[in-house]
Every structure is written in structure tokens, then in C-alpha cells.
Image (cartoon, rainbow, N blue to C red; front, top):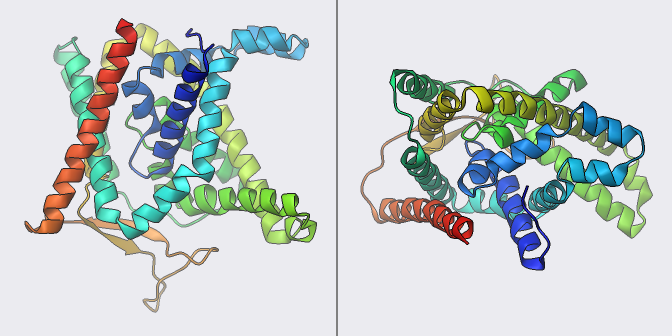
Length: 337
């Protein structure tokens, strides 16, 4: 486990958490890719795997300091602090940019995934018929996701708990976007927009002494949904980390090959040139969510004409590739040091 004793190392880890949290909120982009490319993916999974029987024994016996050390608490707490910050800051800026500059934002994401593919394929050394087969399977799975049609919103608490388990896969599986899966399940806006905004509003109301707003029925419902979603996410995070740790230990090559294929196939999900298809009712009117926003139902992809806007988009794709390859270079320099 790494040591984060200096202020700069702590701030760097928080920034990594912000990057990971921001990526997790974007449909089609995986926070796990950030962890993978920035070189802390294996430490992240290994730390989560420490939430086991010996760890819980320390916790329930009151040995909190030993539990903190056992679970690599410094690493996880700083990383999750960055993720929490991202949900109330960077991700809100990202929401604004997607509305105003959708093509260019998706172009950067598209370039980042291309950069991730280049990085992972360059680092992969175990080539045989099994790994090639798993790469092909992963690509088919990734491509298949882009053709699925999202379901309708469902606030049943058991379903919300299931969504929490599913959504966290974006952290533990590079290339597997939990937020995109939430969009397919119909609960992206409910869980990652409405519920998060309800918590933010609650914090603001409490700080200003407006307790009447805190107690209103809709806000209470959203907070309950967020609590159940969080519980599901924690459950999925811990259980999946144990499964992944076992799989990576015994089947590392074919697992990485599957992830590589999935990341490559997921390029279709974040293809920049697409028309957004919004949910409509029987009369053809656009359906709005509880916050008054249009509900995204799917995307219609197309090949662009060569215009100045297309040229700018290509430059942003190059920027995305450069960001990932730059992070790879930075990570290699740190490992050498």
C-alpha cells in the first residue's frame, strides 16, 4: 500500500478521486478507466477487498485504528473525499458544459477512451487464442450496449438498491459505465441528478436554518432514495471487489482481455456525433422529469460532414487522447521515482 504522508500526495489523491467521481457520472465513461490509467486501480481493489471478516472483526470489537490501517483507510478516505467533491462541484460544471457544448465534451470523452485503449493494449503482453477470444467477446458486449433502449424511471426501493449495486461497476470495472447502465435502467436522472441535488439542497437549507423545506415530502422521499442507493453502492463495491480480486488473481490475462475489448466496444456509446432522442408521451410531447428537464431516451448516431465544427471536434478528440497518454506518462514517471 502507498504512503500518503505529504500534503502534495494527499492533494494528488483527492484530485484523482475528483477525476474518478466525475467520470463515474458521465454516461459511457467509466471511473475505473481513470483508476486503471492513473495507476491506482490494483491498490483500489485490494483496499476494498480488505473489507472482509478480519476487517469487520476489528470494526465491531472497537479497534477503529486497526480497522483504518487494515482497510488502507487513508487511501480510501482521500479518494472518496475527491469523489464526493466532484458530485457537488466538477460534475455540476460538467452538466453545464454538456448542455452548452455537447459535441466537444463528448469528443473529449471519446478521445480519452481511445487513449485508454492505446494505453491498455500497449501494456498488454499475453496474446493467445483465449485472450483474443475474450477481447472479441468484450467488444461485442460493449457495442451491444449502444443499441439497447432505456427503461422508464422506477423509484421502488428494492430496484433502487439494485441500481446502486449495478452503478458501482463503473468504479470496479474499467470500461463498464455504471452511469450508462443507470440510463438504460431509466434511473439516471432520479439517482444521479434529482437525489444528489436533494442532498445538496438539504445541506443548504440546514445551514440557513430553513428546516421546513428539509421536511417537505418530496425532499424526504429523495433523501430516502439516495440513502438506499448509497447502501446498494457500498454493498456492490465491497462484494465486487472480492470477486474481482479473486478473478484478477487467478485469471488476470483473460479478465484484462475482456476489459480491453469492452472498453474498445464502448467507443460506440460515446460517439460524439449523435442526436439526443428524448422521451415522449402518446401525443408526441416531450416528457419532463421532476426537475423539469427532458428525459434522454437514446441517441441517434451519424457520420458528420467535414465542417469547421467537425474540425474542432477532432481537435478535442486529440486533446482527450493527449490527456490519457499524458496521465500515463505522469504515472510512469512517478513509478520510476
